Length: 193
Image (tube, rainbow, N blue to C red):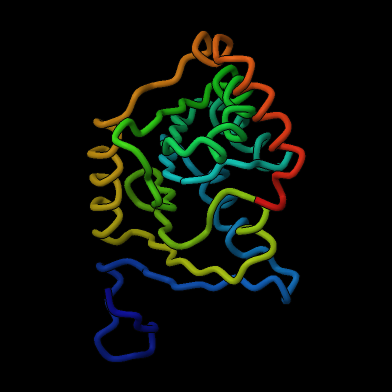
């Protein structure tokens, strides 16, 4: 997609918008987090997410659950990486009981950082759903709106979802004691992960 402003020759609204953005820990603006909140808060039908890390603060956890309880289909695809996974699983029960669907990518590790919503909005970039990425790192992404590329992002999500296993509350309750303890201990140091 071309990055044209409305005043440039060749600009066309038919291609929608692709807006690159950056996030810096020095400007006191959490741009990446706000993009994620924007998508969750403005969705009408669905929000589909791929993230390698799921270490949530209370505000993000509440936003996920509020969106799901309002009837939005919220699906998160997670990889299988034991230490990030152990911490992520400490959020699973609350998220699933709140209506969020969690899927695990069975072939291994998914490193994508993607939010896609309602066939018209997406963001793809380097921003993980964890403390370091949202608040401490230099990150970047592109916000895509009303652009044909959004459908390609959703197609990729659906292709990935086909290789996933849906996590149930029963599975979360039945996970081993070692995994539960490891998750809780790692959650204490989650901001450092």
